[in-house]
Image 1 (tube, helix red, strand yellow):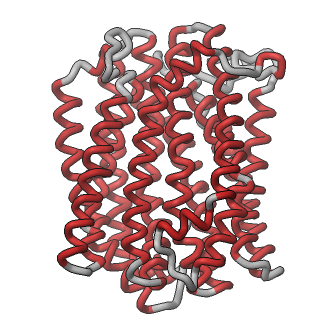
Image 2: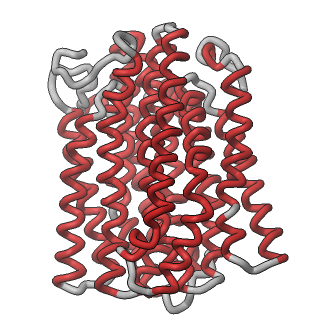
Length: 454
């Protein structure tokens, strides 16, 4: 642990306890992140009606597509920082951090311009219901006016997580989540400002969390101290960050693209289907909580220990993390399966919307264990410097195959259930591939054996 008590190496001590201690704050932060993401839909659906709920829901997959590339790239920064932090190389840790923060600013500004300028075009491509289009454009544009804060927060969060500090991002996220809910209620329920105000509440709240992150990272006397005079892009560090982060960014983007195409097919069934699909996506987000917490822990744990050349420890910890993610995700899946009618009713009183959401839950929820295993093994690969492996697997199965399946099936039969089945089917295929790779490849020496698949 560093002198300020905020960062720790994951290369010593009981690996199970360390992974759990690291994953728990992330899990709690993801709970608040999901509440953060769900608040807009809950409050908009209750106070502004089904069309407004459909407008907010329709933008979810598009927002994920736009942001996912940059959030994936920030994971590469985390791998680089974890590796050098595990090896005790303070100079490279500092250079990597300053490059990462600068890169986040550049990415955030770029995404703001693109998101605001092309909102109507993107939504037309998605075949958004004309009744929903005006409010969807409104929500989307206001969201992207503040997207710089969203992007920079992800970069700062991954910096702190890379050095074993998963608690401070939790504290900042709790504060911003509570602020988001208060602002949502104030803007929508009290002032009746419309869907744009829900997006504004989200970006204001996210801005608060990123300011807190930057203040902490600027703390004097720490290994990670941000200094204005050191801000900039270090070419060598940028190459390393892109080497490990670009595949994750591409992977996230192609999954996001597949989801946009799925959303487009959902939109063809009308605004009730749009509202149901978007609402269920918020519920499903809770199944990702253990997945996200353990995948972040696995990437950091694997990277630090391989950086310190502790191969047996990396392997032992990875097995524990994978199993934990799978079991927890399945428990949540069972809960969602059983209580889906109650959960859907939180968003709307529409019987049609609730019925569609329950149908989706009963098809996909019991297969969350497969989704969790794929993400967990992918996290181990990234931590081992094998970032291209999950990229190729996700592109082939979760994007190309998923889109091909839906395209063919929708030409034969127009039934929402067949779209929902695309998820467990592709999760099962990727799980088999990941298990074979984890069992038979030499992922433990990914940093020592750089290659095209490193």
